Image 1 (cartoon, rainbow, N blue to C red):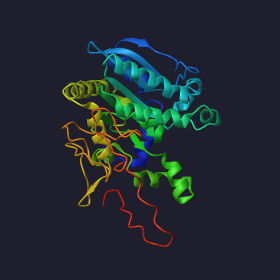
Image 2: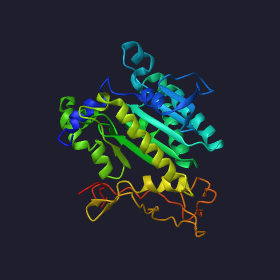
Image 3: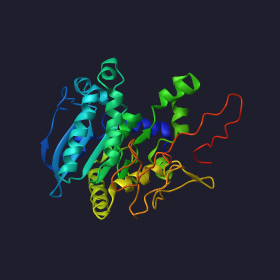
Image 4: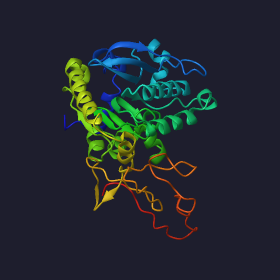
Length: 332
């Protein structure tokens, strides 16, 4: 399907008949013990969470649901999680960390719910807390983008040691319609925006955002779900076996995301053998352990320490009317 355009892949990713998170979860996992609620406010049915077994081994599985019928779409808020959903996911991740269970997420959301109620209940904080928590987890985390993945709402469930995309999945900072509206003031140019945004699985694999792309049957995953489920099963098994041998999963995850967007001689650097790129004024610990970003107090246990004088600070804002010399990140 190499001749399929980015705009066509966006439509395939959004197809109602496409396998959703629950289709993958029911096909791949056994002994599901469903967990509900964030223990603070209420249950968000959009975000599914459970303890399950994957080939006999306990795992924590999390997925976003969109629904197919109108009633289901209303129940699941059209796949847009609320703060309670992210807090529920955080609760399950902490539990997985405590009991040393790998975490597998299935992401299919246009983004977090942007409504007034969600903002009042701390949507921004909930997303930020998910990003911070996933960045520090010491258990294997695998994120599978199965459809549409948009903005921080998707990233809040996709900070993984491995990021897998289905062939017709898309992953971007916002929708093509939103991109066209902001950049060109014309949402009708969404198809053109999709080509510019580099949001397809092939683009993201080349840019080092995705670690693997799983092929789909001609016309999309809905045409042969069993073959797709078998391919995902094989990929998850392989990556879990690889990650079980990693000594410092948090450091590996940090290095993976830190390496994204780095340009070397006009080409995006691959993350197949990542090299840590430290902030300019920070020197990692010399104990031989992999370092990670420091907290406000100046340190993370076992991952390096900052003295007050060496803490990284953002570069000074250039004076008005003068060239900033700012470096542009991207692929030449």
